[in-house]
Image (tube, rainbow, N blue to C red; front, side, top):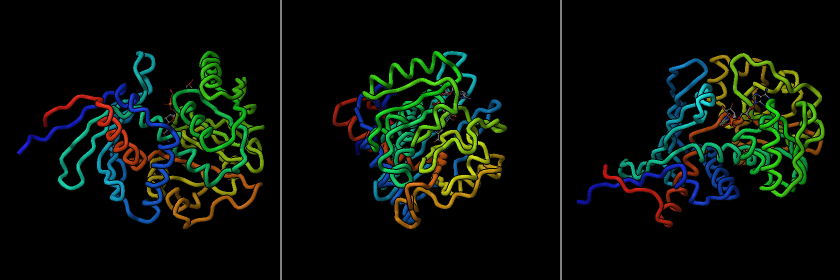
Length: 324
Ligand SMILES: NC(=O)c1ccc[n+]([C@@H]2O[C@H](COP(=O)([O-])OP(=O)(O)OC[C@H]3O[C@@H](n4cnc5c(N)ncnc54)[C@H](O)[C@@H]3O)[C@@H](O)[C@H]2O)c1
């Protein structure tokens, strides 16, 4: 019998597969449809915590319809940036769903960045006004970039406002994203300016256990959609309570995070993204509703995307074959 082989893909191999955002959004939509219909296995993520505010999480999921089984082992260390190291790092393992044998190991930072943007766009596809033209991005890091890119795939965006507490970071974002997405991107000097004229607002700053939320009530206009990538760190409780609908991506994980101290003043979500995609819960009802998606980031997102990365890498001859 042949010795089992696994394919190792570095971050640059993963990027070279050229997987595009539109495909990632569609893959997530398929996965959330399966979740809504109760056809995925995804236990809550256990983690270890070797430094304050840092985590290393294990995120397993099995999506039978996509023949995707695996786990992401991902860390987030806030102190890393000062050392010139990435905040997020980690690996993802894919297992054969018939034999359990691992067949791929890949860097997971690219997938984490892109699938999170895609999850925002997917929620927005159901909860935002389809004619939304203006986006507001608060925090111009990795997530600020992929979230704007994903929204541009789904909506006829013509303009974005961008705010970051570090002015040079904001300026870099404006220069880079206006060119990359071929749209007007305007840097603003206070968070409010990024919100009040925007149809779609993404907050992607640090997740804090004891935040001082800066996005206030009445800033998001009627008919607006928000995506809190950074949990409840940016949105003031009164701003969240003003929403007509608050969704999450997984109710059990939302309740878990609440039990450990997050979301204390956040309204209960009316639905999770699986129920919304499967048509089990209503989507936006009229042009004046305010809606907010709080996607926590699921193993499901990663396992929806990873097999496609593997297929494309194989087709292009990328990566290194290793013996088990
Ligand atoms: N929900 C999910 O699925 C998910 C997935 C991945 C990352 N995240 C979270 O998203 C956040 C952003 O991650 P990233 O990879 O983009 O990090 P990043 O370090 O690339 O970017 C963070 C940016 O926030 C800016 N910032 C800090 N405080 C700010 C403030 N008060 N107002 C405006 N800008 C501020 C920083 O200057 C930086 O540019 C993190 O909190 C991360 O944990 C969530």
